[in-house]
Amino acid sequence: MTAYTVPSDACRRPIAIDGAGTIGRQIATAYAAGGSDVRLFDLSQSQREAAGDYVREHVGRFRTKLNPDGPRTGRATVCGSLDEAVDGAWMVVEAISEKLELKQATFALLDETADDDAILASNSSSIPTSQLVGSVRHRERVLNTHYFMLPDINAVELMSCGETDEGVITGLMEEIPHYGLAPFRVRRESDGFIFNRIWAAVKRECLMVVQEGVAAPEDVDEMWKIFTSPGIPPFRFMDQVGLDVVLDIEEHYASVRPGLPEGPRQLLKMLIDEGRLGVKSGRGFYGDPSVVRA
Image (cartoon, rainbow, N blue to C red; front, side, top):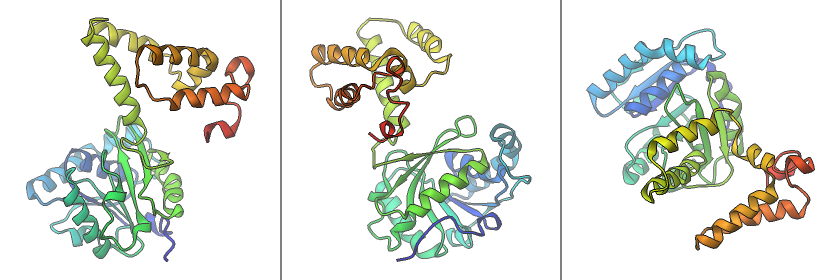
C-alpha cells in the first residue's frame, strides 16, 4: 500500500478546486494568496469564469487578511475540463453540491484521473468522506478538509475517511499554516465536525430562550457580545469556574431536562475524581496533557 503525505514538490505544483461556487472560489483565493497556482473547474462555464475573476479581484485582500508565509501570489487558471484541472495538482479540493451520489461519483473519477500522489479532499460540511469512497481504490489519500468563510474565518477542520494515511493529515497540519490557515484535527468521525456541532447547540439554546419568552433576540446578542469579548474559550472558562461547580450546574439541568446526554457529566466526574477541579486545584482540562485526550 502506498504511503501518502504532502508531496515534496508541492510548492512547485498547482492546487485544483472542483466546484467554483462561493466556497470553492474562496478556497482557491486563499491558496493563490499563499503563493500556489490554482486551477478552477466547474460544470458551469459562467460559474468558473466568475470564479476566476473573483480570485484575481480578491487575492490581494486575502493576502492582507491571512498574512501567508509565501512571498509571491499564485496564478488562477480556469479549466474547461476536470482532467485539465487536476493534471499535476498535488491536492484536489472537492467543493461541489452537497449531494451524496454526485460526490461519490466525483471521488471515483478523481481517484482515476488525479496524479497518483495527489491528496483528494472534500470540503463537505455534512458528509464524511467515509461515505464517498465506496468506489475509490486509494482511500489512503482521501479526507475531509472543511473550510469556513474565508478569509475572515481561517479555520480548517481535517477529518479522516477512516483509512486516511496518517502522513496525509500530519503533512497538511504542517503545510496549511503556511497559507495563513489554522488547521484543526477531528480525532474521530463526527457529523458536524467540531465547530458546527458546538454552534448547533448554541444556536438551539438561543432559539429556545427566545421561543420560551425568556429573552428578546437583542438581549441574547448583547449578552453574547459581553461574554465573548474577553476571548476566554470554553474549557479555560470551565477551569476558571471550577469543574465541580460546572458538574453541579449540569446535574441540575439534567434534573429539569430529561434526556440530556450523560457523557459530559461522566467526563466531569472522571476529572473531579482525579482531583482535577480546574484553576483552584492547579489542573483541570488544562495542566496535564492526558486530560486533553480524555
